[in-house]
Image (cartoon, rainbow, N blue to C red; front, side, top):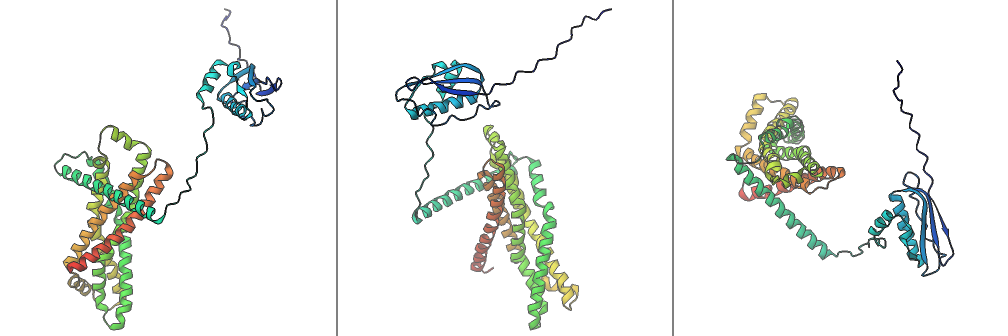
Length: 389
């Protein structure tokens, strides 16, 4: 049996594209631009037309075109023709597009007649009064936005207590874990070392006065009242606050925030509330944990440098550190955590939409968090002094 199946012939390779060429023909009264070849980007059609290519033409004469030799074109052809049009305008020639393909004429008509002028540099320099005014208005506006954000978050927390919040329980649990148990190691290490340093410095100085036993009061009061709250807050500002800002900035860049707003889902309750609530709840607990670890660090150093029993050390610590010191530090830790979370979320919402803006937002959140913590601690110190705490 003879097989009559037809075998398809191999396709012939496409002929190579002709290199785009232009020549200026005719006299000065009737110049004509002759175009040949394939005017595409792949074939090299992006070469610009020289600005003085029509300088020899006579004013008020008409520039015509001959495109019979053009075998193909794309946007490179339109860009070349636009350059020719600008050169003809500078030379005082009339641009006649009737010799061009009809589709090229329509595309060329969509372009502006002249290139856009370069942007002018604003050389106006603000004086000191203008700068002060702008800074004041910006600060007041930012304060209002943060206050509104805090108010929305508080309302969301109240609704969550009644089971009416749009916050997902899964998000809250995840943020609680990241802001609490996940941070125990670094918080413990830093506070242990701080307590050890305090005990070492205190023993060196108190030994001169034969008052080494009072190092227990020094370490206990310093950790309970100031050091543990501040150090824990700084750690969380760098660890968790930066993560919040980067996460929200990434969502902003991926247009996830825009999608939620389109669907009418409030950002404050769906995204910000779990983050702010988790850090506000975990910070006081981390403060208590850090305080105990700091006192433990002081205990370890004291046992190696002073002649006192372990039981005597802890009895002296309990007698020397009052409960109000822990209450004061506990309250500070709550406000520190709320401030870190609010500042980080606000910085994330203000970030740009590029990858670089994510890093900038994280860095800015950490800086604002640390500076704000120190400033708030100074305010608390003044308040404690006024109240006699």
